[in-house]
Structure formats: C-alpha cells, structure tokens
Image 1 (tube, rainbow over the protein chains, first blue to last red):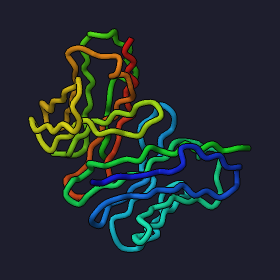
Image 2 (cartoon, chains in turn red, yellow):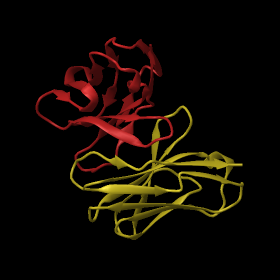
Image 3 (cartoon, rainbow over the protein chains, first blue to last red):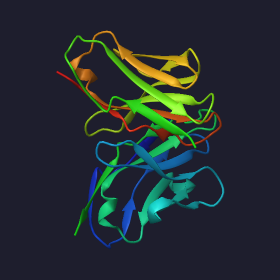
Length: 114
Length: 112
C-alpha cells in the first residue's frame, strides 16, 4: 500500500538558514510526488511536483526537491529561509491511474526564528 | 483559469444536526473531485472522490456522505453530526490524467 512518512513533526530554523524537510514514500511503482504548503486556516498550495525526468525539480518560492529512488525519498530544500516560509508542509504521493487521489504525509510544521 | 470555491469558511453545529458543505469548480469540465479531512495535528485523509456525475467512492467508513449532482459541484453531507466530525474539510479537484490536486480554502467545522 502507498504511504508517506514525514519524520519531522516540527522544525525551527533561523531566517536566512538553509532548510531541508524530509519525506519518504512507499510505493511499488514509479510514484508521482508532490510538496504542498499550508498557511494557518488556509487550503493547500502546490510548491512542486515530480512525475518523471530530471530528479531535481524546481518549485515556487525558491523551493526545490530531489527524487532519490534508491532511498525512496523526496526531500524539500530551500537555501535561505524567509520568515514568510513559516507554515505547514505536506509531502504527497499519487499513482498513474489515480488522477489527483493523493496519499499525504502527516506534515511538518516549520517555524522561522528572526 | 480554473478556480475552486468552498463554503462556508467556518461552521459551528450542534451534535445531531445536519451538515451540508458545498464545493464548486470553475474553468474546467469533468474534473475529478475530492473531499479531504484534516484533523488537528494530523495529515489529510481522503474521505470521498468522484470521477463523474453521480459517481462517488468512499475511502473510509464514517458518518458522512458525498454527492455530485452536477459536473462541477461536490457536496459533503451528514444527517446527524458527531463530535468526532469536527475538523478542517478541504475540497479539491484534479484532471483525470496523473496530475496534482488543486485545493479550496477549506471549511473549519466545529461540532459542539
């Protein structure tokens, strides 16, 4: 069965520091992978997605993620965090025959220190 | 461009009362539609999805039901709310080919 694990429930980083949010997935075939961001009380906004091709994908707001098949990981990174990046981040996995039916991780809450 | 509307934004309902949350999509036709629930401190759980009018699949047994009376309208309902139905409900749409889901702004439901 598909599953997504985000090992870190809460991460705090200083503004300007680099960021890496971890995501591990379990899926028997090539997954479709996504990172979403959620501000408090809001819906989810897509940051980036991986379907195929280049394993390093660029997203909005300066985020990138790297698909590593050997590690079943799709970690999200940003070289320099801004205070406005404080939010909750969700990794999700989908399948080729399931459209937008996604399995989400539990989320990682990011706090940014001034 | 496509947009998704979800209302109301917040709702406080007594236990045992009915529920109706509505979601509509504009700018696309024949979308896949989804209802997710997000409980406090937890990820998103898929409740229902629909690939067409009148076609509803339930992912988890629960006190809720969903209907799709029109192509771009998706409704989440309950006849009698339970305390455990409290949460943040998100509607989403996607295309039928592999693609990302686009989310509404959510409804915060508090059952008291």
